[in-house]
Length: 265
Image (spheres, rainbow, N blue to C red):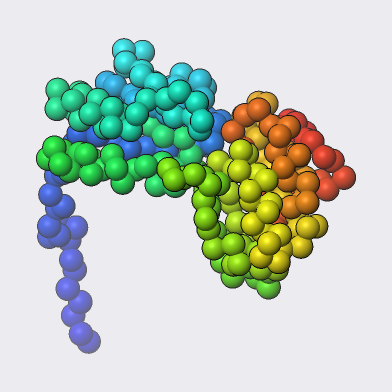
C-alpha cells in the first residue's frame, strides 16, 4: 500500500502582504445601492476621500463613512463638468497626501469610464491602485426588461457601443450592428439617436428592429420604453435622464410602452 504524504496548510507559503493602494477605482453600478458589490460597499465605508461621478446616486453616497469628504467630479454629457486633466490632478494630489482615495464611477469603471487615463496619471506619479468592478448599465437594463443579453441561436456576440466620443458622433461598425440578430448596448445615445437611426438604416437594418430604451436604470424614476429603429429619435427625446439603448431587444412587457420601475420589477 502506498503511503500518502499529508500536506499541512502551514507548509504552504503565505502570499506576500500587498501595500494598500493609493487609489481604489470602484463601480457604483447604474444607480440603486442594491446593485453595489460587497467590496465596493466596504470601500465606501472606509475611504477618507470619495471622488464621484455625477451619475452616482445619493443612496450610494449615503453609505460613505460620516467623516469622509465627498467631492463630485462630473461628468454629464454636453453639460458643464470638471475637465479630465483636473480630475486626474486632484486624485493624484490627494493620494500623495496619504489619504485613502476612492474614485467612484457609475456603472463599471472599465466601461466608457475613462479609467485608462486615470490609471496612467497614477502610474506617472508612481502611485498604486486597485479596481473593484461594478454592474454596468447594460446588464442592469437587460434585467429590468426581462431579457438575456445573449441567447443561443440568436446572437453570437454582444457589443457595447458609445453614441458619441471626443470627436463627435461615434462612427462604429454599422454594417455589423445592422445585422439580423445583433444585440448591442448603446451608451450615451440620446443626443445621437437620429444619427444612430440613419446609420443603422443606411446599412440595412430593418426599421422594425426592436430597441429598448431604459432611462435612469434601477432608480426609483426608471422608465422603460419599447421602441424600434424607426421610432428611436422620437422616443429618445422623451427621456430627461441618462438612458441606455438595447438594440435588438424588446421589453418582455411588449404591451406597455412606458413602465415605471415599480411596475417593471
